[in-house]
Image (cartoon, rainbow, N blue to C red; front, top):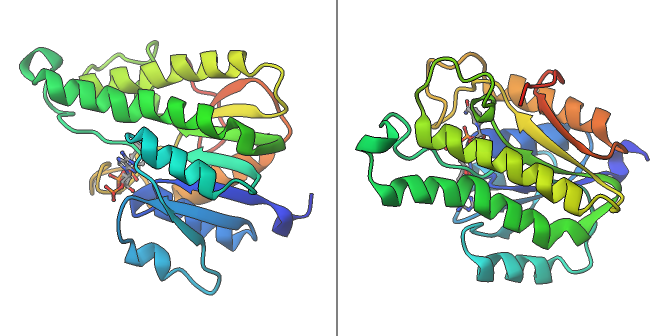
Length: 228
Ligand SMILES: NC(=O)c1ccc[n+]([C@@H]2O[C@H](COP(=O)([O-])OP(=O)(O)OC[C@H]3O[C@@H](n4cnc5c(N)ncnc54)[C@H](OP(=O)(O)O)[C@@H]3O)[C@@H](O)[C@H]2O)c1
């Protein structure tokens, strides 16, 4: 497959890692379709090649169904669900309110998997369904605590992604759970380890290396396997 023949749908690209991924995929010659919930001037201003733009809120099934219909003729080598939230991340679960914890579970675990299920028929043979996880979703690596609802939501995403991969075991695509590193975004904060470009460039290289593979991998932006 020639590089310029590759296409990616990036879900949640208004800012942060999604925006960085759009820039990085475009720079490597991919055809990019990028979604936002609202206006996204930074995404629209990407040059010299602009992404195709679309709208979706992954928590809204009607919105997801509309996007699926709008992209009826499209097939993507990669569908990359980036969208996520970290509301109430610094509040221990017992002290936080139920609604916030449930919203984090909905947006970070339920909605990405429902999106993946809807768009499984849009992944080209040899392609990948990529879901943005986190090392914080690793149960075995949780030796410091903190970020309780967020951790739980990403651990749930990991478990649901494995079930998604098993459910689609006969399908001609693989599933990747991605840890982007600790990255300086609105969510990651200014003290994070790496910048968006370092993370995004790494993730694009990892994705390119995984094309054609099946099963469910849990990888970081350097291509290293993360422990479950
Ligand atoms: N930054 C890190 O260090 C880090 C580390 C590990 C994992 N991650 C994961 O990486 C992903 C991106 O994080 P980030 O750091 O780039 O965060 P961010 O700067 O806060 O950006 C979050 C993105 O998700 C979108 N989004 C949120 N809820 C959505 C929904 N219901 N439907 C559609 N889009 C929605 C936002 O859109 P709006 O602009 O409309 O709000 C925004 O584009 C998340 O899944 C996060 O958990 C980040």
